[in-house]
Image (cartoon, rainbow, N blue to C red; front, side, top):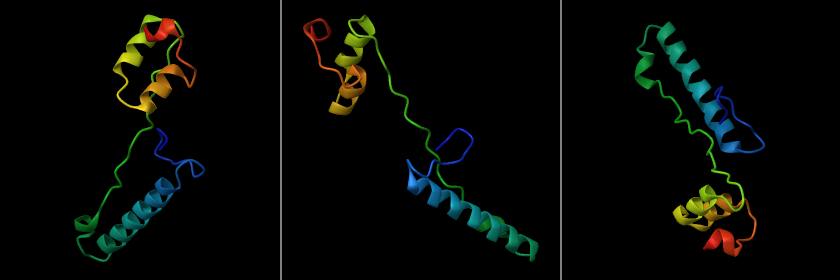
Length: 92
């Protein structure tokens, strides 16, 4: 999900589908309200998630060693090392 509320269809096809359902829901609720019904009872907003921010570090730095120590799974370790191999300066 982009910061402006749009979705990149190549990256996340589910976000595009959810945004289309939200638009359809809002149009239907607006139509019901125009016809005299209480359309706000059916109004639903799609939950929005922001893109994950990864902590990128410089090799052989204190921040990188701390990020490696804080890594709890392989994905966090992958992002803290930027997919590079660990060397003894980073590891110890």
